[in-house]
Length: 317
Image (tube, rainbow, N blue to C red; front, side):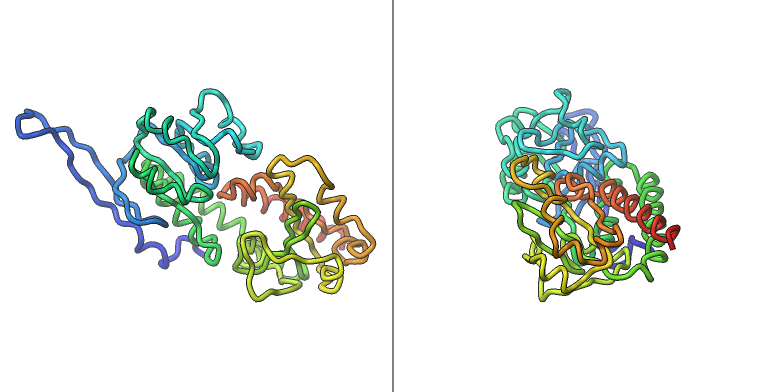
C-alpha cells in the first residue's frame, strides 16, 4: 500500500515568487516561496526558512525525523518523549505552552516560519500576524495518508524530499509487515487510562491506527469516539474479552504522579479473566510519544513494540 495516496497529492502546489527592493534598487533580492495548503488555509512560506518555531509536538516529531533545524518549541508545560528530550534544553527558545504561545517572545524573535496546529490551533490568527504560520494537523480517519502528506509538505519546505521518501517507504514496509502477522492474531482493544478511568478507542479514531493500519480486529465497537475515547468499565472489557490490550497511560504522559498507574488499574479480578491478561498480551505503549507527540517516530516506536509482541506470540505457539 502506498501511503502517499492521490487523495492528498493534489493538495500541495508549489509556487515561487520574487520579492525585491523598490524600483531604485540596482539588484532586487530574490526570495523563493512555496504555497502550503493546511488545516487553516493556504499560506505562502519561504523555502528553507532559517528560524523555525514548532508549537505542535507532532510536527516536531516529524521535523526531527527529517533532521530539520528548529529554533524554538513550547517548554513550560511540555512533557516530551525521550527521543525529543533535547528540545527542552536552553539552546532552544521557549515559546510558551502547548495551548498558549508566548506572543511577545515570538514577536521579538522574528521567526521565518511558525508551525502551529494541534493544541495551539486557536492561536493561529495571532501567530499569523507575527510570521507565516501553517497548521499541519492530521485527519484521524485517514491517519497514515495524512501523516504521509504532512511529512511530504514539511520536506518540500526544506528540500528534504529524498529523506522523506526513504522515511515513508520504511514506515509503509513496517505497516505491511505487521499486517501480515496480525491477520490471525485475534481481537484487540486500545485503552487510555487517566485519573483511574478507562476509555476505549475505535477504528477511525485518534488511536485507531492499531485497527485501521495494523489490521487488528476490534473487540468492541462504538457509535463514535471522541478525542478521549469512550468510557468503559472492567465489566465491559471482560465481556468484549479481547486477545490483546494496547494501553496508554495519560497520567504518565502529562507528568501526573498522584493516583494509580495504568498497570495497577488493570490488575483487578475482572481484567485478570480476559484472554489478553491470561496470555500476557497487554502492551503498554510509550504514552508520552503517542499522547504528546504522535508523529512518524512515535508510531514507529509503537510498531516496534507491536512487532516484537507478535513475534513473541508466534515463537510460543
